[in-house]
Image (tube, rainbow, N blue to C red):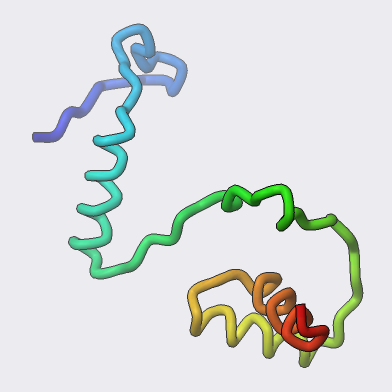
Length: 95
């Protein structure tokens, strides 16, 4: 079932009649989109970190080939490229 509202201007949307989507509905929407378009949707936002796993925000310059490698590896593993860099560095220092 589709609903279309005849609106002349964007500001004419009847917000007072709108309702919030529940978390359960949102999950069903995501599942339907993933099924219909045959895609895997990624979770958004940062994962919660425990106190022993906090990260310090920094700025760093990395050689373009290193960055390309990290992004390629991250795409294959479906994780962020910064995670790949962190994992590689942690393995190198044996933590």
